[in-house]
Length: 210
Image (cartoon, rainbow, N blue to C red):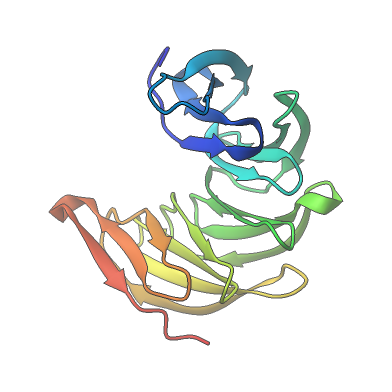
């Protein structure tokens, strides 16, 4: 790596590894061959002014999405490695990212305490938003249940949201969590894992909503 990194994603259509380097406002790209014994080769840098924060790959549309730290989201063509669109997301602090690839909804986590849906098939138009706890960072989405999970380290809460067919968002419930528990992941159809960094553990939370 040329500098400190944050998110790492495998871009399957191009057999590349993309790694965000926010200190240098860029994504570093490596090519991966079919021989697992051969080290990846540095291929390019992709400048992402004001970012990059978070990263998710949309194989269906040949895009990757990442945020500026404040107020906007980039849509990147994975084949040309260029930013093709910049969409306002309404966040004072853009943080978490998740994707409903089948329906073309990109979910944005705002650090100040808000969830936003952007429609990647319609130029990033906003389809929904809802209030969450504060201190949001790493969010996740369950495509089986169409539920979003927003752990919030500032308010020490976990908010569960329903995503409607039109992308609008409804808060199903908010439960107490842990201070600094700003990151989470869901097992499809199963529990939610929330990080508890102060105690060096993961919390297993059940989703009680249909």
